[in-house]
Amino acid sequence: MKIKENIIYVGVNDHQVDLFEGQYPVPHGMSYNSYMILDEKIAVMDTVDIAFGQQWLSNVEEALGGRKPHYLVIQHMEPDHSANIPTFLEKYPDTKVVATSQAFKMMNQFFGLELGERAVTAANGGTLELGAHTLQFVFAPMVHWPEVMMTYDMKEKILFSADGFGKFGALDVEEEWAGEARRYYIGIVGKYGVQVQNILKKAAALDIQAICPLHGPVLTENLGYYLDLYNTWSSYEAEEKGVAIAYASIYGHTKEAALFLAEQLKEKDIPVAVHDLARTDLSQAVADAFRYSCLVLASNTYNAGINPFMHDFITRLLERSYQKRTIGMVENGSWAPMAAKTMQAMFEKSKDITFAENTVTVMSAMKAQDKEKIGKLAGELQEKCL
Image (tube, rainbow, N blue to C red; front, side, top):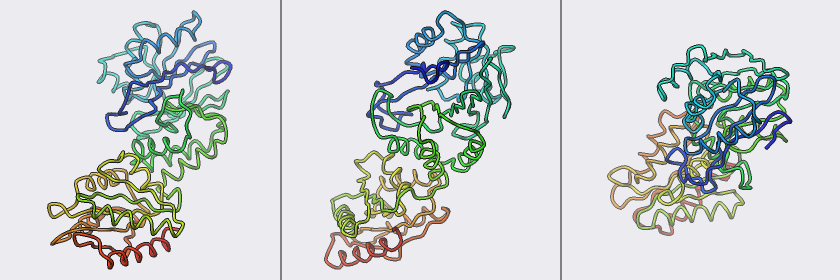
């Protein structure tokens, strides 16, 4: 697949994987993207997952058309992009490797590689001349590993963005970009909003006409849309006005309260996403919690605390610096309800979290007075979330 006349896609699609990074369901597979820039000197951009090494090498060989690569540029050392460095260098022993100094340390850790004169250490803002193409390196530490850099092709005005602007899903599956890109970003990069903001500032100084990520499609049109979403996600602002409801229930009474609240909100024309934390893909629940302006947590009391699924969910939010939201709470207990107190305490160190005044406490099973309390919470959320 040609990106430009002299820039060729040589990546692969993975429909074998069920859990990306061992935790994120990927029903539509995954792409591991690699690119080749053909010029007086040839640069290959990154490798692919170890399971697809031979397919990737075949793609590379075909694109080379009998020539030899001069450089292998490594932007990110996570194994789904770096695993085939040794096999590539075995096949093309004269190739030089371009990476950050931190990346070379990781190469030694992963593969025991000491490249000597074959190592070209990239400098932040430094360049590499290929002929007509000049590559400029833009360091992007902690987006989302410390060794990451992005690469800007000054001729074609293409940003090779490492894991930035990626998404779940193989390239031979047609689907809307934002949903799986949001789940990917929040799940994998979400903790590092400050660092993403820094790289967006650097990107703003570049004339970018296309973005080539390491996962997901090449972005060539309406780039402002993608950049704006990344700005929203990395600044922890709500993407949409609405309410995400996450509930954990044992015998169905907490679930009943959560679903009743959802119906109350829908009657007020408030967008709602509801997740049963015991059964949903937690990465999707986390993504929706970041997507909407308000969050409701509904949990039974369990071992003088909260349901384990709720604890796991809140932990995932906190790990990703959840902030700038209004949180409502529904708790259930048969003798000493503790869920609301426990949940609120977990957010003690979070930034810009406002708790709804109307906390709903259900004693065992929902009753008429509980519905009234839920109605008041719905009214408060209508004021604060729209």
